[in-house]
Image (cartoon, rainbow, N blue to C red; front, side, top):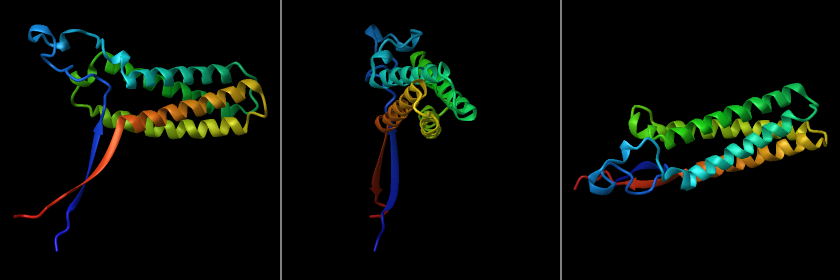
Length: 174
C-alpha cells in the first residue's frame, strides 16, 4: 500500500512574451541591454495593472471631492486606495524596468501575490465600509463602486497570474 505525496506547484505568468530572455534579439544581442521592456506594456498583466491604477485613482478622487459622512471610514478608504495605487505602480515600474531579472534575491511572484492578497482584502473591507456609510451621497457611492471594481480587478489579477495546480507525485522506489 503506497501513498503518493501531494505536491502543490505554483506557476506565475509575469506577462512577458516568450523569447524575451538573454540572446533573444538579433545577432545574439542581449535584451537586458535596453533599459525598458518594450513588450511589457502590451501584455495582459500590464493592462490589468493600468486598469487597477485608474479605478483606484477614480475611487480616491470621488471620495476626496465629496462631503464625508464618517471621517474614519473615508480616511481609511483613502489610505487603502492610495497605498494600493502606489504598490501597483511600483510593481508595474519594476516589470517595465526589468527589475525581476536583475534583483533575483527577491521572490517577485511571491511578493506580488502577498501584496494582491492583503491589498485586495483591505480594499474589499474599505469598500464595504465606504458603501455602508455613504448615505446616498453621489460622490461617496461612486467611490465605493469604483473601490469594488478595483477589488474585482485585483482578484482577476491574482486569478490570471497565479495558477495553482495540484500534482500527485509518486514516491515508490521501483
